[in-house]
Image (cartoon, rainbow, N blue to C red; front, side, top):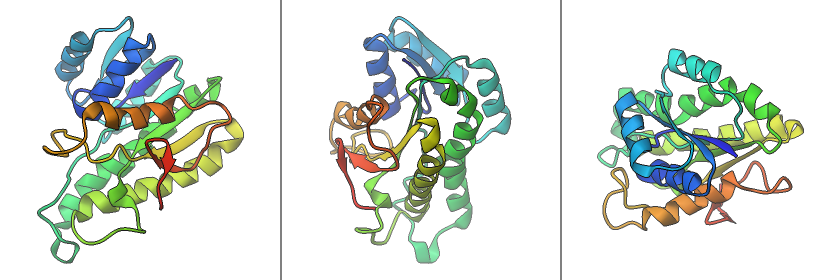
Length: 223
């Protein structure tokens, strides 16, 4: 299996890349910094870990990546920013909201479209959008407006891509890793290994697995 993981120089993305590499898969380990990608790839080791500088907000970066990457089976859209606990929707800085959307929504949208030729050529193509229970409308309250709204939109995009790519055999799902103790999540969350397991589950679904769903730990979450 050949996988590309965005935002893989730390946190959940790093652990997903490490686990895939440890299992013998080829991994494109991406980060906004070329040095960050290279240093992380060297640290986690693995038989075939390929560091790649990729800013998902950059059309040029995405175009270059799509041109240079050969075969691809799994795209893991993990890169995300701005868990804006200091904001409320009624007073939010909309520039912060727009910036979050560029990475959390338009980044996966831009990259998935660019890599569709490779995914369509794969025998077992998968797209995993790393979302959050903060995007569940069923339980949503106030706060973190930039992060929550961008992840709600990512969930909607997941549904649309899943429907439109079903005939190509591409399984597209959104995954909540849970509250994980990372730089973004902060202390007190579940171990990063547990959060990464949800992502890996969706990345390695069988061909008759679900598509267009929202999951944590392999179980459906309410939209």
